[in-house]
Each structure stands twice: as structure tokens, then as C-alpha cells.
Image 1: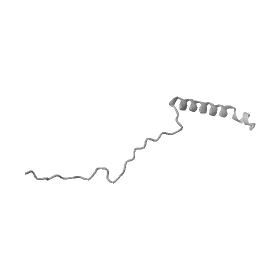
Image 2: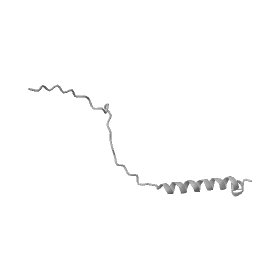
Image 3: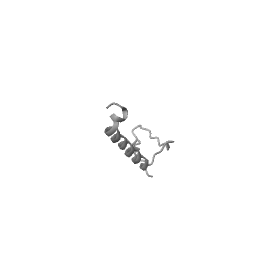
Image 4: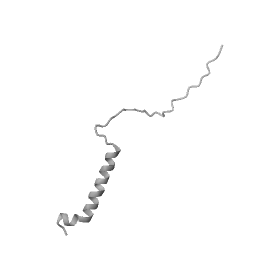
Length: 59
């Protein structure tokens, strides 16, 4: 008769629970939209640096 000499090890999670949620945001951006937005912000920044004082009446 075979003896049952099995050793059971504890789980490797270390007491931490894992939760896998498939959360989808209602707002999503495509990479192309982000690149265009960054280019627009750079252009506005450069324009304000060049003509900002005259445009705002400060200079």
C-alpha cells in the first residue's frame, strides 16, 4: 500500500488578493489626437512668447 507523503505548500500570493477589473473609461483618446493637441499647445505657446505682450496690451 502506498503511503500519502505529500507536502502541501502555501499559495505564493503571500496573502495578497488580485482583482482584475475590465474597467473602460468613458473618455478615450487616440494617439494622433494627443500629438495634434501637443502641436497646437506648442504653437500657441510660441505665438504668445512672440506677440503676447502686444496682444495683451502690456507692451
